[in-house]
Amino acid sequence: MNKNELGLLDIILVIAKRKTLVISICLLVAIGAIIYSLVVPQYWESKATLMPIAESGSLGSLGGGFMDLLGSGLLQTDKYDMAVDFIYIMQSRKFQEEVIRKFNLIPYYKINEPDTLKAMELAVKKLSESTMQIFYDQKTYLVNIIAETKNKELSRQIVQYHLDSLNKYILHSKMSKGRQKREFLEKQVDSHLQAVYSLSEQIRDFQKKNRSIDITQQTEAQLELYSDIVAEYMQTEIEHSLALSQYSADSPVVINLAEKLQLLKKKIKSLEKSGSDLVPEYIVQIDKIPDLAMQYAQMMLNLEIEKKIIEYLYPQFELAKLEEVKDLPTFEVYDAPQLAGIRSKPKRALTVVISTVAAFILSCLLALIIESLQGENKEKTQAIKAALFGRKKAS
Image (cartoon, rainbow, N blue to C red; front, side, top):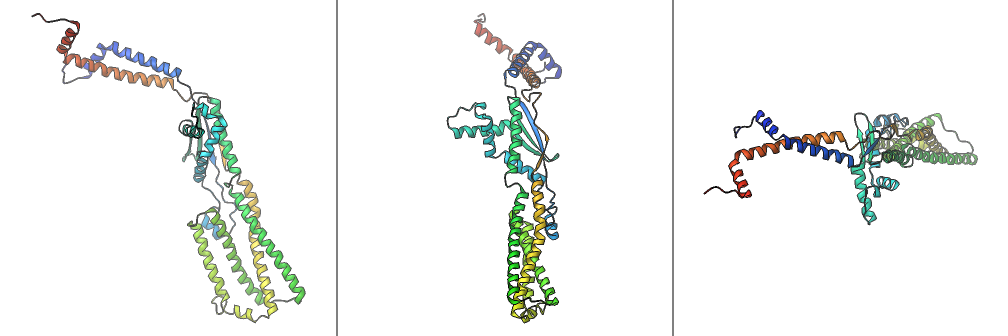
């Protein structure tokens, strides 16, 4: 064998010469891998998948221009954003601590820490790192929840608890956008209904006291124009308040509504100025109305504005009550957690195969090293043997 070159046949020859060494190492490692895979605890997985249900914005009649800005609906939620919210909830510290307490996982993790706070900290770390896997698949739009423990029933129960607790959290928390919207609109409707009742009583008392006062058709038309703009301003103001409750102040929706409010405010001020380009004679004509007629016109104007707002709000309030119920199921469970039929680890066959292959490679390298040392240092090796066993050269 050339000591500077080692061909394939040379390698095969060395392995053949050292076959006992190679086979012995491979057998020992394979037996060790088998024993290890039999002794090590078995782990079982249980898995559930759920699909976020994004609302299509059926409360979309809050004004055509407003809905154009929002796309498919004021409170429509993207599936990805919902999935991120779900994962955040299930990976939150409070949620994880509830899981640990529910299934008494501190003894399961063999944590013998007397400090309860430290024990909980260690358990939370083990739960997130070794027991639970929660992730979102952007291709299938599914949230995957996987639990892996030494007990197949425990794995299934933990996953089921995640589903039940997530659903409970959604139903009883502020994630229900429908409930927020319904409460907001309910307050607005009640407020404006009270205003209508109050104005109606004022007009009735005014008419009784001062007799019936009629307003000319021209004045009514001008008041209607003014009330339409003021009503639109108040509607936009409500939309702006509602948008602020759902979006940040720098959101394009909030900014566009703020700009719309400014434009409407300018129109109203322009109408209220004498010599306005919109209605030049408006204030002059109003100023000429007798005091009683002016008071009556003002009350009728306020009443008309309130009625228009209620006409706008009440249908949305009724829809919001339906939407609140419709909004509750925010996810659909595609795969419910089941008892595992096959353990997730250890994978015995794979463990034995990988260990045996690794042992074969290492034993072959060891055989080559031994052969190289014996070939290059044969004389030194013989001298070492002679020294060790007391053989001396003849003098």
